[in-house]
Image (cartoon, rainbow, N blue to C red; front, side):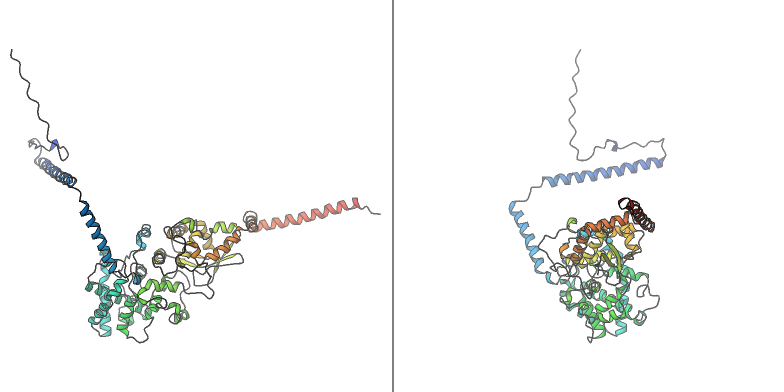
Length: 525
């Protein structure tokens, strides 16, 4: 018999660039299935085939990229030089001296973006044109129209005035601004007129400016609080000289020096973290006091409403507490190190050392005093906007080199005092803290989170001397012993009564023993 030859081996399949999908072969229509099911199967097969082809194309592109040769050394050096030249061109067009409206650092934003970014209205170029803020633009144009109708002026005068200030205004912002010259000028006019209408309306009344009593924005209603909160955010500012120029166009140049600053302080008064607002006497002295002059220390283009509001918070007391150092930059490296930020012990530990707490009657919430064993702290109001307010004030002090760190010092001092809800509860019992949050735990969490990533030098604080006094008192052993006796053995009136009763009984027992033993040593004659 003839032996059959074995068939030749089948060649190996070509390399696949995508996933193996043998089930994508064309299927025959099954007559036993309904037509709708056959259509669904065909659709599924078509979709999977499309996915397979897309995967194949992407795989081929990736392999092509890997096969591309690396750039030569000359090309690499040329690209490096191009980057260096681009940086030099950007530095040549940037004026660091006038920079005063900063972007919030990323390490501060990580904890709470909502505290730094506006939710209702945008001012300036950083958040201009964002979708969730565009609804307020209609009301900005309403403010412009109202000003033009009230002053009988043309918009051309305002546009020309802002065009002259464009270069100075751009220098106040950090980094290149993507708006064209016309768009940037339009933004200054639109946002500036809106801010001035709010300032003047809060001062003399919106009805006096021509707005209806039930206006949705230009009225002292619930939305005003959200607008005020957005207007004190660091990234949501306009240079003060822009507002001064726009108000000068409306009212004339006579006696307008410092008027915008005074209007701003009155407008932001509801955000003050104290229960004692500015009195009429204090308000009348704002314009006369050099401390409230927004151009007293620096050129006016380096200030904005947040800085003016901060100055109003820090108006000097009659006898301010001296600090160890007023230098903005200490010789030590400024790092965000919690071990370097301990100004004082917490409330519970200070109470155990015999230090007492009481409220100090003043509207300067930062004016803390230590006298005769009492730590006197002014009352602090905490509401839903307090975190955003303090966060932006701290961010400004961190970024602006000519700013002191007084707000940061106060917040870190309170952060050291408050370690638990029990500390908050005791300060509330003393009348030092009043809050509208849900619980004492939320207040403790607020202070503990505010300064997590803040760079701070304790020796460059206005509270450094006070902290040293409290620490010396805390370290005295006699004070600790007195506090332990009071908290553990004399923590209620019955303990005092029992102690005095036992003391009287002990004295009577000693007298009885004395008179019983006396005849033995000296018998009667």
